[in-house]
Amino acid sequence: MSNLPLLGTSNQSNFLTNAKKSTLLTLKSSPVNYLLVFVPIGLIAGYLNWNSNAKFWINFLSIIPLASILAFATEEISEHVGQTAGGLLNATFGNAVELIVSIIALKENQVRIVQASMLGSILSNLLLVLGCCFVAGGITRVQQSFNQTVAQTMSSLMALATASLLIPAAFHASLPKPKGNSGFFPEPGSSDELILSLSRGVSIILLLCYLFYLIFSLKTHKSLFEETNSADIDHNNSSDDIITKDDEHLSIYEALTILLITTILVSFSADILVGSIDDIVEKSGLSKTFIGLIIIPIVGNAAEHVTAIVVAMKDKMDLAIGVAVGSSLQIAIFVTPFMVLTGWIIDVPMSLYFSTFETAILFVSVFITNLVILDGESNWLEGAMLLCTYFIIALAFFYYPDSAGL
Image (cartoon, rainbow, N blue to C red; front, top):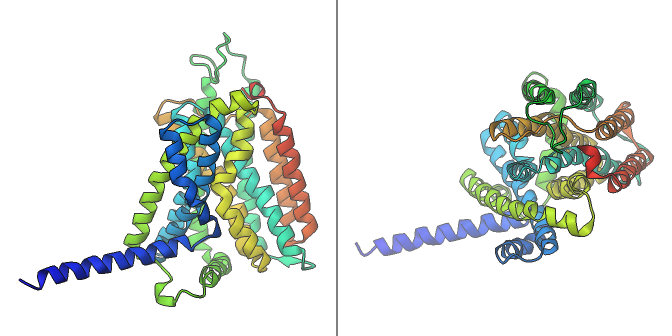
């Protein structure tokens, strides 16, 4: 009986040691984790109802490291559950921040914010991230090469995603104008309800197509993707040489705990951030479209931006292409249709109808991206072209009024 307290103390000591080790490993996973100091400040800002600018920007900064930790925890879980399940996990939680922010915005009927953030995530990955990769990797090299088949497969799927937005826009343009002038789209009881029905059907087809892509990349043609996966492992193993092989990975329970805690923190921070958008729009004069399309995607994609640029500098272009184009693909044929179906469930009219201007922007972006990766080689000038395209689009949306998109 006298040994029981000692046994309890030993278990408690082991628990604290493991907790300390997993915490340190998580904090060391990315340089952006220094921004975690903003997480408690952002929650306090929301609780004490500080002004909208403080609530928006502090929580904006706090979500960046939380997104990085979500990605890290997901990768750690993938180490334990195998490649197929790991691929599904990365597909789901790799865009967890975009999903959480979008679901919260959708519940508050901020459909324009959701649509703009979806489009913005696609554009920032295709143009900004890929452009930075080509410049960072190509500035010290004449040419860089990557797996042409994998890149073209993802580009073809991006073309399909573009068609899924072009067709509802063309469908909408051919419909008679709805009666009344409620200012909302689609107007209940009008022919615009056909857009919702079309969007929901297309969303189901896109999700099936994404499932086929996962089967293609993880099962039937996984040899094509093996080089990218091995590059990913090499990058993870070289990230911190101080950590020994046995201590490199979290246990599945530690990773799940971190994933759960981080998801809850992201939910609170995103709720405060989305709740402050209306005041930001009113006071700053910025449109909801610009905030959703240019500013919010930086939050969810910050960790991916850093990873892609670092591996491109190490001449691991297959991994860089996989992060940049692959992330856009997940947003286009997984997250966006998922949000349409979520809106259907909670009775919010989220559709795949984007304005003519927005669909034209997406078409141009996918077109120029396909051109530069068509030959399986890249250089810094092609990266500069992608960056210039992105900045032109950002400038255009800065002056683009919200009312034009309705």
